[in-house]
Length: 274
Image (tube, rainbow, N blue to C red; front, side, top):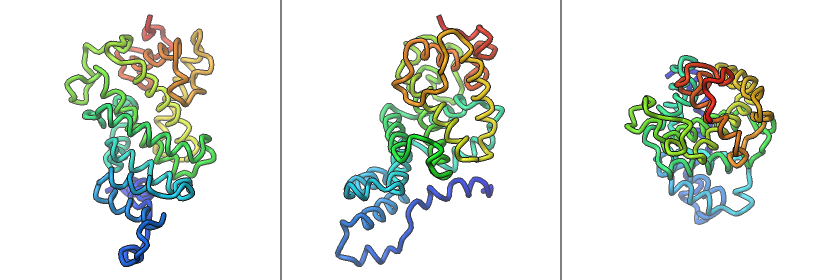
């Protein structure tokens, strides 16, 4: 295992620490500390439902702690299909040759609607620590990057981009068609992309340089288009409506972050959806 992957993964693989005897032998098994420990043990065994239920049984004060939110977010992410080590290795191996949306799609080929909902819950839980990426810790922001990659992959799995689930975009896929990819999935791609950009920038992580470079150049190009001013200021899926959705559909076709099905950059005009 590469050292850098371990350093990224370690905070989430060992989200909570403690001495098992302190809770196993104690009669007080419903304290926040005990529930947090039980959640960790369930998560270690990939029993995500049990881990989430333990977290949700905590007191309001216990659940409000930032370490509790980070842990719960990681459990929702686990249930949505995030395998941290696999994702970290994929980013290392495939960037920059592969853009972020094709990479995300390959990582989540079997994702379901339920998986996408869990990815969204993971995002919402972690962002509830603080909506400003600069007020989150580097570990929290790196965790969010992986959650967003998983979410974007799950959103693409609901489309016809890869109907045969082989990890390669289908030649018949039309990103401009709501029949091939619904507006709701497109909007999740938009929020995921913008949250990823901010989280990487705030974390100071060097591994995301290729992502931030491609997304930043894309922002400059797309915001120069009519009706796209402020496109990259949005971080919530509900913000992407009307022309902004068409802009995202063009990005799916582009060579900056998408599948290069239009043979150019989003600002070239060849990627525009009618």
